[in-house]
Length: 251
Image 1: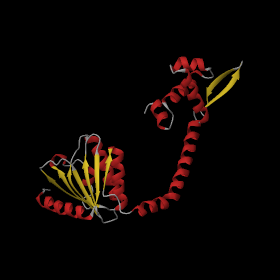
Image 2: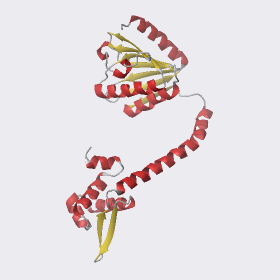
Image 3: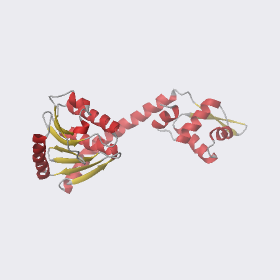
């Protein structure tokens, strides 16, 4: 990973990264040289310097009534990360403290939403994470129409990770793959006791997951979409349809 990208991932803006790297390269200097080296507008350079100083990554001295800036030792980046980690840990504890009250507010409203839509890979992570938290050892997820999707690599990586996570809690699956996706998710093949697998020639437009009282319609486009339906009657109906398809599918 490039230096600039790495620094951005820990919370520095593009301008902060440019200014910080410029200071590392030129040492103690005035804003004029920073502006010339980075090509960033004067006001934005001052903003970046101020934010870098707040993060403890830049110091300054005054010579002849002019501020000169200097990047501190790069080891400070590790201290900066530790401070962020402590802040996140504190925020996580705060959230845990208020979760019971938040859940109570939700319960007072009444029944759960009957249908929700989740978009993108973050949405996929959310809804599949919900499945893994809900299902217990020995529970079963029924899947049919499993395909390679429009982004085969992302689909493969996502569902291999999902299969590994399900296996940790011994959650079982019965999966009907589209024939074109045979062998696509290797982690399911490694665990035949947990994953019963069959295949069908027909290509389905979407993948269906049925677990507990939930039915998930998963559309694996470049930007995937999941429709989650909470309804026992719907889930039971789809399970019956799954049984019909299972009888027709081939190993």
